[in-house]
Image (cartoon, rainbow, N blue to C red; front, side):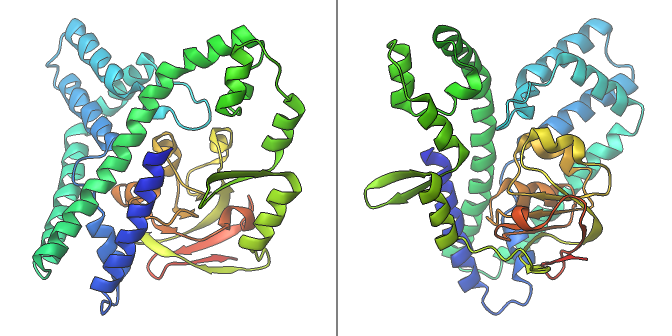
Length: 349
């Protein structure tokens, strides 16, 4: 858990530093969007381009059936865990990639691929323009930001692979202890050790903890509070005005969108999203990409410069306003929402 915490702290420090560097700029959000373009291609983009490249070979009839099967299996081996996330999603099947390649081959795979590469080159050109007016130290900071964005995506992609490897372990612990995997994943390390040693744990206490808890850091380290104490903590530190109708956030990807809000907190909510809806999230990860592509606009609580939702929304040209605290608790499914991702304003109509 230390890696994402470290990356988040770096993210906040970068935003603070760039706001000082560009204090006189009128449209700092646009500059930040360009600066935070990844230094290396995101895995979701790598996957898209790999599918398009194979689809083009299929369209041009450059592959035998055996060659196509071999290359598709290679594609599956590298990217099948990209659908994994935080909610027990299944990995992508070989059949998924076979169908995706066939579908793209019917369209214009060459043009689609060229468009992605042209967008990347344009971001690179704009980043170079920005760097030309900076000091050497500030240029290094821009390069470092692009690297951190990639590292964050790389970390999540590797965690997905680790998750696939780890699932059998949870299944085995579940078998040995006669508890479902979902219950095992909610346990503290010491509780798992007790279970595996054949000792009893306080299951009622575990269920109470998972019903309402808060984790935070203080000088003593990680603190866990539950129940009423956690609710008091939320009231004290996270005041939520549920009557508010207009919100100001940071522009992650420019544009405008209006539509029906869909609050998506887990994969169980994915089916709610239809084309043209407004996606309202805490944050996103690679498993969210298919529903992100459906969105007319995205609104997110996460406001980091290197956050997945910020970078991917720009890559797909989806208007996005981020960094609005508690927005998933205020906007409701079915609300008509207007997203002005030119000024960073979100309104419930």
